[in-house]
Image (cartoon, rainbow, N blue to C red):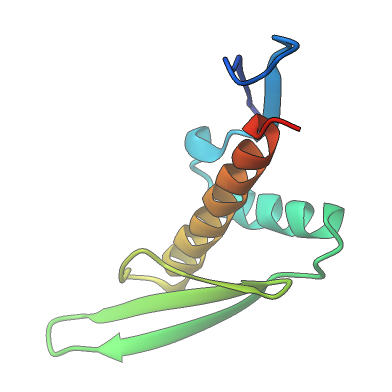
Length: 111
């Protein structure tokens, strides 16, 4: 299920609500995040997201960090994770939140 975040802006001269891309704060499923990023990239003709995972083996545990390339942009996970899937999911979330902020800024900029 997707949620839409609708905001009114004082910089919006028509006072029409600004509807943004699906709000990603509510998604918890790893697979859902990966699919959402793939869908977003496909809609923007960026091609498929490409993930790269690094593994750091400490004496205590194995930790994973990931990056994802979407179009010409590269996003990194916000930290290290116990599984590669968690690292990839976090990276997808980082990318989607970045795109959400870009879309918000574009929508709220007076034209």
